[in-house]
Length: 328
Image 1 (cartoon, one colour):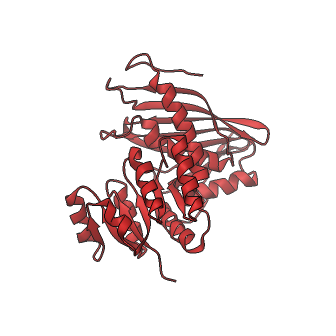
Image 2 (tube, rainbow, N blue to C red; image 1 turned 180 degrees about the horizontal axis):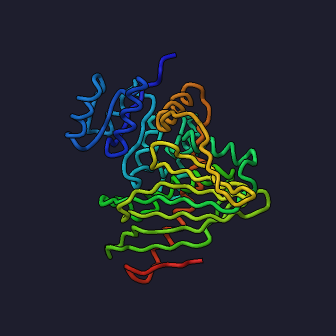
Image 3 (cartoon, rainbow, N blue to C red; image 1 turned 120 degrees about the vertical axis):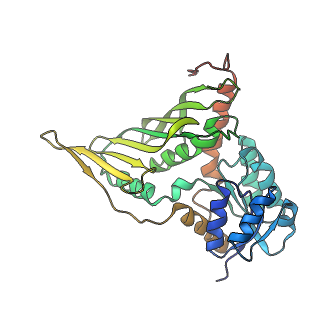
């Protein structure tokens, strides 16, 4: 079966990884970016892939069936909408949009025109995350008591309005997916703009996951000012605690438990070693070919946009540039 041809806009730090994966899958036809240096690099690395600085070229290309949007988040809605109106299937990097109404509009437009609309919530395609989901469902960890996700790095680009729009979509989508929760709620949010420039670069969310009549508490901690990169999920269960440390190259997933005599036991479950982004890109192409609704569709993305839109309103009311917030 011939793969659908894909065009991509935005080949920056993350977009270049999408370029690599779609090119390796034999589906990449055109790359668009405003930076000619980046386009020259694409041409050197991927022979046969065309480049352009004009997004309209992607919309007008009859051979292109799908467009991948990997640009700053405040451009996602406009670019995705143009692509859908042009009859193209769309893959949008997280978040789908910055406004709940925009997310709903994109979903309605895709559904009306029978087009695939997929959002790049990468961790839902991570083999370790999916193995952990199976362990939780099987009762291996016992009753889930608490979940926490720490995602921190040193980021001087700071393109988004706050660090949560940049990092928290990963955490919220992953935690909700693991717990099969479609109604995640925020009970408290805190944020600081440590540079005094109005950009919140350190933040946390206290969350509640209603599951089977019980609210499971959780927390997300994000930072753009941490020199030691952290990508760690902790799931505390009544029998075992799972720690997924994605910054490690080996033994990313560990299960911790105590024996009756108080000894600590650590297990390292095995799972597939496939690159999550490769799995995600293949899934998008499969959905185009089969008409299947993506795992990370607009419904999945809506919850993330809803939460972060609400959080943005809370953070925008902070009394001073360096103030800590505790809004209930």
